Amino acid sequence: MTTAPILLTPGPLTTSARTRQAMMVDWGSWDDRFNQLTASVREHLLAILNGADRHHCVPLQGSGTFAVEAAIGTLVPRNGKVLVLINGAYGKRLARICEVLGRDFSTFETAENEPTTAADVDRLLQADKAITHVALIHCETSTGILNPLPEIAQVIKNHGKRLIIDAMSSFGALPIDAREVPFDALIAASGKCLEGVPGMGFVFAEKTALAAAQGNCHSLAMDLFDQHSYMAKTGQWRFTPPTHVVAALHEALLQYVEEGGLPARHRRYADNCQALLDGMAELGLRSFLPAAIQAPIIVTFHAPQDPRYQFKDFYERVKAKGFILYPGKLTQVDTFRVGCIGHVDATGMQAAVKAIADVLQEMEVLDI
Image (cartoon, rainbow, N blue to C red):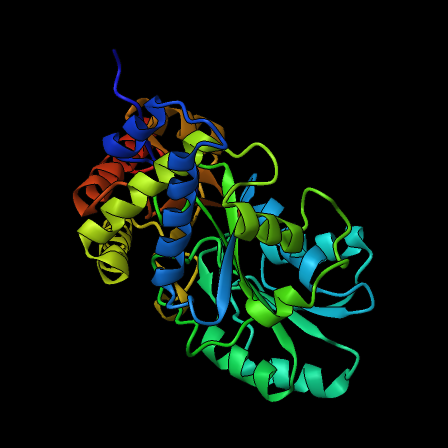
């Protein structure tokens, strides 16, 4: 039996044996024990961002994008207007969601290596009083760029507007405190920094905003107001839950606490990122972002400028050595990406760098 490769991607990602083992049990979706599992997961998630006082955790079947669409569709009234802040593909996806849902929106786009600033948002909100909500990607996975969430959130609050945060790639690893950062919705998913498996999104919805959201949603299945109301009343999911995903996330959250919670998870990912950056720099491979705005989640590297380098060949060869990388997502520059998250440590990252070095030598791209 061959060993499964390590996923150096932004999710799905490599999980622990304990997390995988948790999926070996079948659960009845209305069973009391499963309802207790769901309640425990929601409590654990709220605790990570100190959100229990002001927010509900509303889980939803599907990928993270399902939960993003549900948040916009539920919490933005049909006559609302969303300012979408973009510096990568996931910001563009947010704008596309607004378009498909028929929500009025405007966009503000910066370069893929340039964070949005609080001053930008202040100026945009001054200029357009019709804006009711601002939607922001905290860590834009296209490059790994980190946008300055606390500063932007404060400006939005000062203007009396509402914030929707896509924290898909940051929640659980980068500190966000709901007592200090005001938001109507923060969205994440099971298969990212919590090191669960894909299949469940969740939205931390501000209690009064959610209570006022009845009738907003475009969809029965995506209605977070209904999802929360039914769960609060019965302890059950409205429709068939991803039982094995919930069980795996519950087990992953137990390990998260055992590891030391968010500070320990952040430290491990930061160590992974540094080991990766140091090792790749020794190979002469440059990261796309400067260190000041590089989140320890995923790193974009400039592809070697050599005609013998082809990503597909490079990818397959590195995969054969036990590591799965990620293609670049930039339109203007040839890049590839390496994730720092998942059940992996700095020793694993160093092994990945060695595999990359060996492959580039085999391809006669590097002469070390």
